[in-house]
Image (cartoon, rainbow, N blue to C red; front, side, top):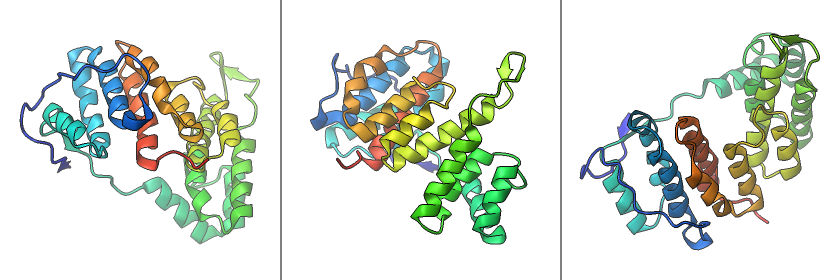
Amino acid sequence: MIRAGFLLLSAGLWAAAPASADACPKAREAPCMLEAIWSAAEALPEKKQDRVKPLFAPLALKLTDPKAKAVWELRLGDVAVDVEGTDYVRLTAATAVREYGWEMFLQRARDGLAPLHMGRPEIMGAAIEFAPDAKERERIIELMFSLAGAAESRTISGISVNAFERADFGHVLAERMMRGCDLKAFDRAVALTAAPKSLRYALWRARITGGAGALADDIRAGDGEDTSYVRQALEGYGAVLSLGYCPK
């Protein structure tokens, strides 16, 4: 852990500046959107507020407006930011591609053989960047869509036998397509997920289409009980804040 560099003034403070009651304007979208997510977090019970509070720190550090940064310095006090550790999924993908070669890696992915017998969607998603060229990159992406397939007709306790991996493929592909600014493939991927209408995917889609600030009112409405709503908002808008909008 490292300290976020936030001032120690009013450590643990959970008082938010009042947010605008409309969409966030483009000129001040980032601070406005964080305020909207903060408003949703305030509706949570205190213990749950404490759980999500540290998640704001990485995004607050990316703000460029001095006044907005000062507000967050006061608000977050000495909240710590997690340092990213080794990306073991990426490391697994890189090692497998190197050891087996590209063709054999794809075959093992099709067959679900080690190391793709567990976490296959995530490992394949990480391997996209190791494709030897653009054609092979598209090939592995199409293979992932193919492996996700249609929902299996056989069920266990009413749940499709491949529902979980299918949803995982959808989520991994949605994130990759969002990063690659491919709207058509993004929509195709989101349709495979367990919650295609979730806030996270709406914000990721807005990174491609523009205008995430239009979702501010929906964010402020919050959930009231579930921290996953705030987590999704932070993850969704975090991509916009970290990567910027896709070029038009």
